Amino acid sequence: MKIGAFTFGGGYAMIPLIHREVCTNKKWLDEKEISDIVAISESTPGPIAINAATFVGYRTNGFIGACFATLGVVLPSFLIISIISFILNEFKSFKAVQYAFMDIRAAVLALILKAMWMMFKSAKKNVISYVIMIVALILTAFLKIDAVFVIIGCGLFGLIWSLLNRKENSHDTD
Amino acid sequence: MILIELFMIFLKIGAFTFGGGYAMIAMIQYEAERHGWLTEAELVDFVALSESTPGPLAVNMATFVGIRTGGVLGAVIATLGIVLPSFIIILIIAKCFEKFKDSKAVKGVMSGLKPSVVGMIGTAFLSVGRTVFFPNGFHTVCFTDILFWIFLCIFVVSTVLAFRKMNPIKIILLAAVVGIGAGYGLGL
Image 1: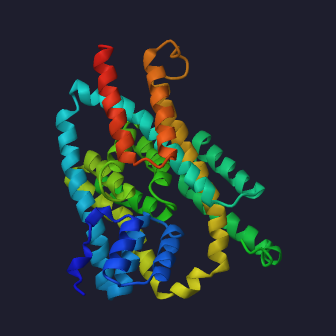
Image 2: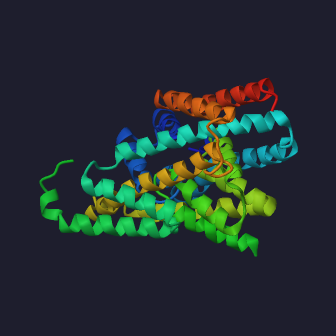
Image 3: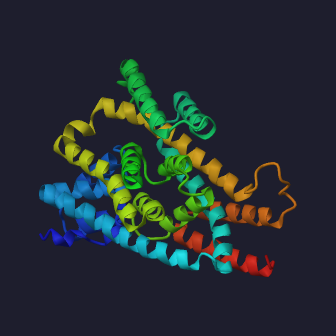
């Protein structure tokens, strides 16, 4: 098992791809481990792909593996974006590019809506949950409060709330 | 100076973003606005480009903002800033993996965090929506503007396509083609 080979698919490292490469092709980890890693990646801060790569790297090859896996995910992105950024600067004044971006923005709005829906689906469906959603929205959108504080606040609130409700929740299979 | 600032800000964003790149948009926007790095329209363009290029959305956006504000070195610094917290946190967790997995405390924190992320993506949605539909503020009459209706059509069609699990790259390309067509067709 070569560490260098860990630069698999580079930046395309989305979860299904990681799954196929690591689990099916290389047999580094089994199904259960992969699904654990995905769950952990989602509940730790930072980009999910980076978290997953670091984790897989660490699991298969220790610290060095983690370094190479992370580098492998970041490097292609980094290079591609650098190139695109320079090209974009050259072509920014072209009418066609401007037209394209005007409408692309409307499409991005749709993608954001989709992302919001996905996150909404994965959150718990209860009154507390909805209240947090609305409060977080008001705090960041209208009161312009730094999202960091909102995140810390909501995390703490979730923690305290779950501790207070521990007895009720112990019957909750969820 | 700007490099240190970039690093600290993306470190902060990397350390406090849960649930993927879209949750980051509101945060990047907040910082970019405060420091006067980018206009809202530029930020939305970056999101589109980040989404249609390979790699994690968050890393792509960090690289973009870095390049725009501090050149290639800025890009390196911003990317490093966004990756480092993940990297360190995961290394720590990987060691005490089993404990973390079933931790009641972690579940509790997540039960508060997930809804807050929905709210923050909502913030991104509102501000991007304002940029798209009301670029000159709410006071100008835009319902008579043909562009408003074109954007609305694209938004609705894209939403339907996105919810039908169409690849985001295809949606963005489609919007680009329509935009170029409409732009030349209307002779703007």
